[in-house]
Length: 230
Image (cartoon, rainbow, N blue to C red; front, side, top):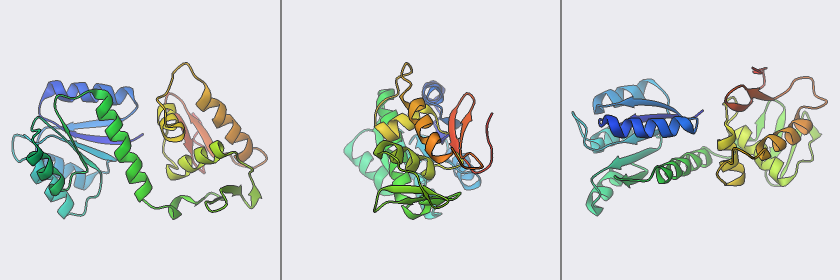
């Protein structure tokens, strides 16, 4: 589950964003002041920061500058009523990755969040997800094996495995999987994700002593070496 830090002092806006993100299985923590936000990010890990500009103590621009000066590379999405081109340039120059003006559609905010998370995932590099728990991915040949045994995956199954490998030991919702692997919004009436999870399980777990793909009740799925079935 991706963790989002929301730095927003307007309780109505904060509640609206939090409610929407939690419905999409994001974990959200809200902070109303800039200095508190800096302290929180220095002490805890987040996948993305949503940052307002007009805060009670310091500006969002200053928060952004401090975090970047301290080598914090988590994606920052500025969300502000200040929507002039000059303000947007200032935000990006301060180190923000994206800038969305208020008022906004939640669907656009969600799309921008997903885009930033995908970029962060890609920029983390390709080598660190190619090997885990005996599973090896050969990107050049577009193939995968476990303990030296070829898995004979379809292209969609391979893409699903790559997504799991990149997010190993993390609970993934069907929504996240559908958006990453199929690049579509998740239809709650569809069982496509479940079907392909079973396809992949039959190849990656069947005939091996320990399963790697686990069902996380109420959340989705996880690729993990030790049992996490619940």
